[in-house]
Length: 109
Image (cartoon, rainbow, N blue to C red; front, side, top):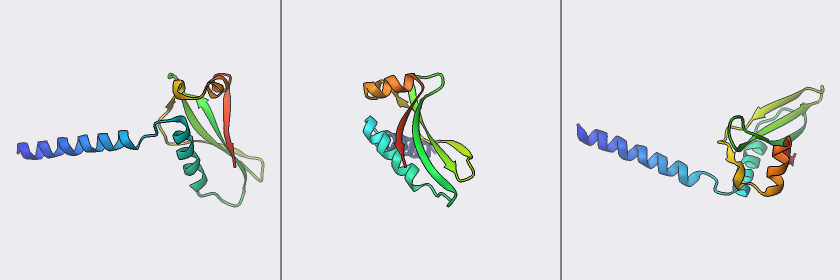
């Protein structure tokens, strides 16, 4: 019986280490990973433009990325990307200043 618990604990530790090693370690890696995700998203033909922006996360000192999509009919949708917030202290200074002032436009598609 204890062998099953040991195996489960070892597997859990392996998943934990995998997630740590896979996580982006720098701002550039985080942005590249997010840009890749946003560009691979399936879009319909009604999307006119897309913009990836960074906002200050609620109740934390980190940034969250949002994808804004504008459609032909003028409608704008906001989608939060499913990534962990990135620490603001690890961002470049100009990004920190712009995010604290409102929002920072990361990329226009």
